[in-house]
Length: 370
Figure 1: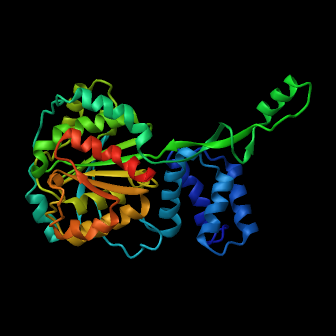
Figure 2: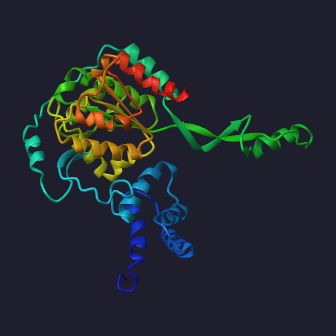
Figure 3: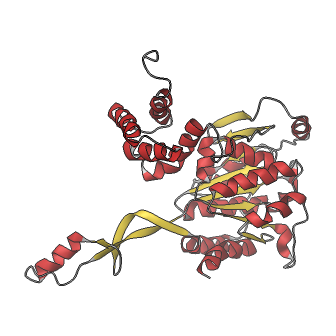
């Protein structure tokens, strides 16, 4: 079949197959419609192709971030943002997903600095214990859904004002008035919480706060509808599934068994680039409220961390960074990397205690309202 298909068309045919391999339901008729739409548009930019793909392949709104990530990877040839084709990371990092471990090799050559950092990696086992902040976390969880930024959803709800007309309610009101339409009932798109991406530093310098941060993550997972949690030190580990266990101590025990780099070194830049190198993970950041719990004491190459945060900021709605070093109101970042990324952060808050961290996260919504 490939001998009869023009080369320019093959990427278009391959894209629906790529979607199917990632769980999308795409019928053969939709693939034909996609090709016809592209032909009809005579696309001048890649965004025209994207619009044709969205219109004909019809991804579910919940799958749209992953759809866009796969589209970028397939048609733009990059795992990052469009225009970042020249990005060539040069390190490798272990990525621990909930369902197994894989080694993400980023680039063709092994960076000698990365090898040294890997050699210094201290693998350890931790037994996490839920801190005695139950009431604080419960109040935090209750307030969180209304505190974080929202965006307009795809569903509509009845409202006193709005551009849409609620025909069903309007007709029912007319029937109560003998068919006379006294007023038109309105609809508006219901707001929905933005997804949350939580990145937690579990290196040695954050040892005193790791248990509390994982307990806080457990509360956020159960308070918000769409949350992803990763830890990083010298490895990147996804903990979302483990933290979905309702019982907090059971969830922490499960999570502690997944993380292998407790209390070791810190390679923030490498961890973030490993995160962005996996399209499924990178899709979690698109339009999300990204919360980073780290002191920012990067031991790797500062330029790697700067570049990774820039790419993360391009995808996210906002990035809020919380560090226990900010206990002093006059705190200013001292590391080269954190100073450089400070303009990209929506806030740099205090995480020296659970209560302070909870107040700082809830203040994200207050800042939005102001």
